[in-house]
Length: 84
Image (cartoon, rainbow, N blue to C red):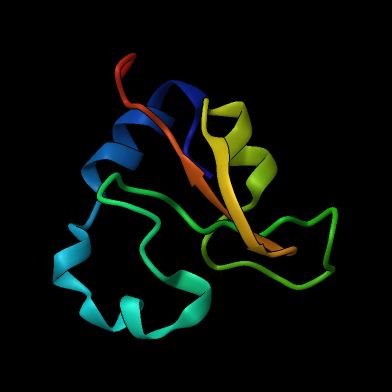
């Protein structure tokens, strides 16, 4: 995990435009909510599965908020990025 002071910088540097990964719109769990970007971390409180996308609790500590929850274990989380 990246140190807290570098977390926001690391997250912003690694954002990928949604239009660059069109297959996401074919996966019902990952369908576009609207035009604003979201992240799909794993909610470890709901499932014991491992995560390669990060954990919802870590995203929440970084200022992300749940925008939708189509699947209990994988919330769609959004950060306004204003404070970054």
